[in-house]
Length: 411
Image (tube, rainbow, N blue to C red):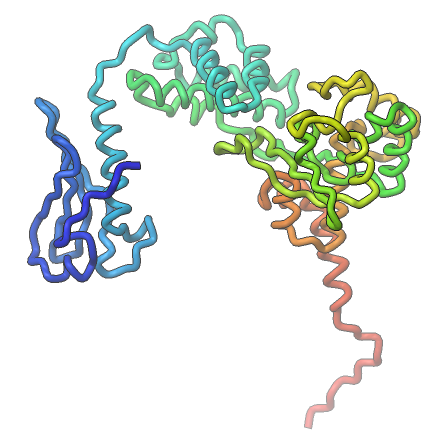
């Protein structure tokens, strides 16, 4: 971040209060001026760019003359100058002529895949789109797309895909097209995909598989019968409720096995924003911590904490066949007969962990943080469990009306 250029007449509300109405400018870089305009209806910050034939001016936002600066309703001198610097960069970039070949839908997906890889996101989202994208649509220029093109493609997925899967697929394509629009100013409208790829309503129906604690313990025992290494993997999944990708990413140094042991769980690639390198503490029990410490003995701090019996790290889908085997051994393979909402996978351990904490009266915010998700996602996908638990709490404080009710006589 560039250093703020100070000005004694403008950098504090008290100094600006002494100024008469008018416009005042501060040069912050060659051709870049940061301004203050004071009028009868208030004061605002502005910015002006003058370089050669390029002359542009804009309003940055309201000054903090009357309100305390909050970065939204009122901007301090420093906040406004920082925004002005961002605008200078954008204004100059917008004037640069577009170069290279126009972007097609296919090349937009290539760009998005590269971006996901750089940000350590899930590049599999692009593969899901390509699997269902017809060649004529893939070859079409993004700038030539219409609402009808994209809506026709989205609706054509309905016979073969569930509504929730359609939404996940179209969301990935929208992200790729938005990135293309960010990089190529010849794409002047995002309306075609905002309208044509609108999400299907009511698609996110929860099909979470919730297992009893006894059944979870039975699965852990069956996993240890397969191997010590697979047992540790399943036990960590059951105790922490973390995703498989997070558990596979644990390193030996992530185990903190003191009096109150915990794992520094790596963040997943879900959600928005950069979470590279982010780790959050998740508590575990002493017996599990002891088993993990024994498994990690004599290994390098950055070595995988959990490994396969061969000593290799767990990779994507390595667990699937083994978990399916212990599900069958525990009699959970006929999930319809058991009244479960879906097939039992390792994700059932995550769902069960979240519901266990909801029923344990753990605050939703803490549950969200420890499971690397958001309060909104928990309320959306576990609303039935939250409602049931809220009903139990409310009943405990319900007014008792067992006594005979005697009507009052009117005088």
